[in-house]
Image 1 (cartoon, rainbow, N blue to C red):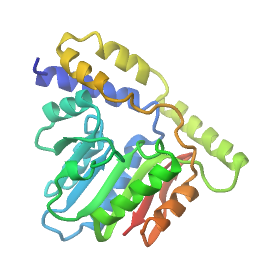
Image 2: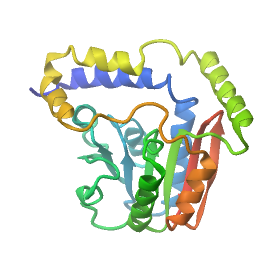
Image 3: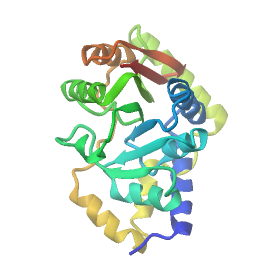
Image 4: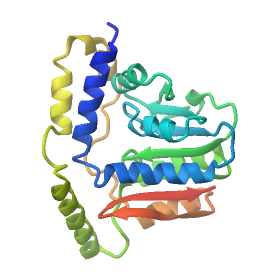
Length: 253
């Protein structure tokens, strides 16, 4: 059953609201990612950007608005989220179903040239370190020299458990001041989605895939990610934006 524009808009808007619970300074983090991509691709007529773990296209849509001349690939394993994005904003990106790190996942993107940028939000903290190192190595090979991997995620700051705890407290305070911790949560959103008849086929396809990763992930700090990135072939890696434990980490090919 086809998903209507009205239905897609309603459920993507609802997704946006529940995601605010989990990303401190979410709009600022999106803007910082776009700032990096815009700077790196300045002067290029049609930069090629892959949004990894795109969900319904939250970041891809914002990048398309900032960089209307860019070619954007929205990559996710979830057929429902991809269809919501494709229906709501078909011109923003080319939507590709693939699981990051799975054998052949880069081939599924059908790249016709090296990427100028790969971006991601809250998707690269799930793979175990060995798998993540391999993913970073694959991305380094897929990017042009000078291209970037830009990762917005919740990553513990360097220093130790006390500093990590303080960063979490700062983030929690920010969430409370913004009122972002109220309203529907992730589990509630998915429970309600399953009550929508128009989504039945997409949910059946989703259930055939391995269950999406949830929880706290691999627990790697920002510094640990930087070390993996440098070992994978990136020449520089570091944090360019942070609020609490929410940060934007950039690696330059």
